[in-house]
Length: 453
Image (tube, rainbow, N blue to C red; front, top):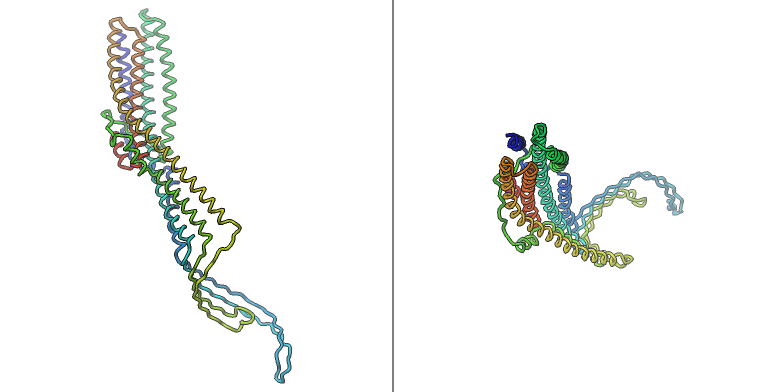
C-alpha cells in the first residue's frame, strides 16, 4: 500500500501548490492591459522617445519661420560730455576761437521689419522642418511598438518564471516524499539502497533547479518593474482553455507588403533620407542671391556731436539684395558633404528594410510553428499524465520499478514547462509580427490580454 501513496501524496501537494499560486495571482492581480498602460506612462526609454517627438514637432515651426517676416526693435541712450573747438566770426567779422564743453543725452529708437521675398535656403529649411516633424512622429510610433512588445514580453517572462518555480516545487516535493517512503521501505527491508540513491540524486537536482527558478523569477520581476515603474505584485494567468488562432493574412508575402507600407521604422528611415536630400538643396542655395523687403522706423535725439541740438525721425522702405560671390569653397564642400550623407541615408533605408523583413520572417515562422508546437505539447502533457497512471499500476503489479516512475514524472514536468513556454512564445510572436508589419496597436494588446484572467 506504500507505493501508491508516493504518487498520490506528491500529486496532491503539487496540485495544492499550483492552486495556491493561481489564487495568489487572482487577488488584486495586475492585468496585462494595466501593465501595458503603466509602461506607456512610466518606462524611461519610452519617455525619452516621447520628448524626442515633442522636440521634433517644433521643427515644423522653425522651418516656417524662415519664410515669415521678422520684426526687431532697438533702443539706446547714452550720456555724453564733449569738447568743441571752433572758429567763428565775431560782430566785426573777425574769426575767433570758441571752446565749448556741451553735455547732453543722446537717444536712438529703431524698429525694423524684414520680409523674405526670395530665399531659397529658407524654402529648403521650411521643407526640412516638415519632414523632420514627420520623422519624429514615425520614430515615436516605432518606439511605441517597441515598448509594447517589451512590456508584454516582460509580463509573460514573469509568468513563465513563476510557472518554473511552481513546477520545480512540485518536482522537489515529490522527490522529498519519495525519499521518505524509500527510507521507510529500506528500513523494512522492502526497498533497495539503489532506489534511495536514485531518489536522492533527483532530489538534489530538483533543489538546485528550484533555487535557479526562484532567482530567475526575481530577475524577471525586477525587469518588469523597471518597465512599468512599479512593483508588479501578483499577475493574471493564462486561461486553461487557451488555444492559438489562425493569423490573417496567412502568407508571409502579404505581411511583407503590409510591412513595407506601414512599418514606422521604415517610414522614419525614408523620411530621414528625404531630409538628407533637402539638405543638398539647402546648401546649394548658398550660391543664389537673397532678396528681402525691409521697412524701418527710426527716431533720434542728439545722436551725434553735430546734431546734439536736433531731433530726427526717419522712415524707410526698400529692398535689400545680398549676392554671395565667394566664401572660400565652403558652399561647394557643404553641398558635396550633404550629397554623401544622402547616399548614406538611402543605404540606411535598405539596411533597415532588410532588418525589418528578417524580423518579420522570424516572427511569422514562429507564429506558424508555435501553433503546431502547442498542439503537440498539449498531447504530450496528456500522454504524460496517462503514463504516470500507467506506471503506478505497473509498479503495483511489480512490472516497473521506482526509477520508471521518476522518469515518467520528469517527462510530465518537462512537457508542462515546455507547453507554458510555447504558449507565451506564440503570443509574443504575434505581437512581434504585428509590430514588424506596422499594425500593432492597443487593440492588439487587448486581444492578447483577453487570454488572461
